[in-house]
Image (cartoon, rainbow, N blue to C red; front, top):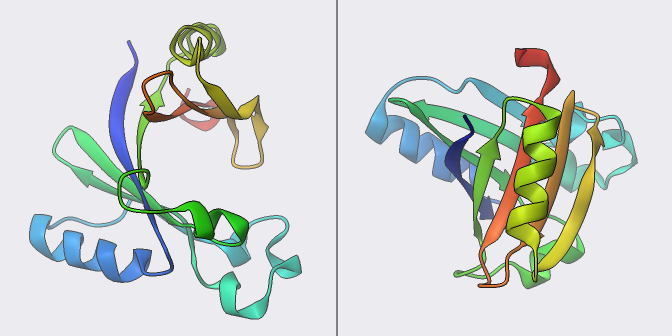
Amino acid sequence: MATINPYLNFKGNTEEAFNFYKAAFGGAFSVLQRFSDTPHGSNMPEELREKIMHVSLPIGANVLMGTDVVGEMEETCVVGNNVSISISTESEAETDQLFQALSAGGKIVMPLEKAFWGAYFGMFIDKFGINWMVNYDYNNK
């Protein structure tokens, strides 16, 4: 069965925000990846390389996740569209099914594809304006 968790987008202060959340909830980050850690990180402007590509903070049975929005996406990131629901699936088939069902009538932002972090991943905005991310992690199976 799929699980859902909140995914937060910030305009450059993800690290500050997540250190604040970690202090409040306790625990430790299960993932902290910077843009410099990505395959194309060396092609990014120097000031963006140390920004957060992905961070995960387990909170009980849930995970709070986030990223720094950079480049042209930063201009469109505002309070109201800066939160997504992230779905973690148990198979490619479940990923395909949920992506197709939930994106019907909406707008596909990133089609499902194999991502460099070892996942089958896609993003869309549903017909009600809600941002979704669907992720099947090959490494956790």
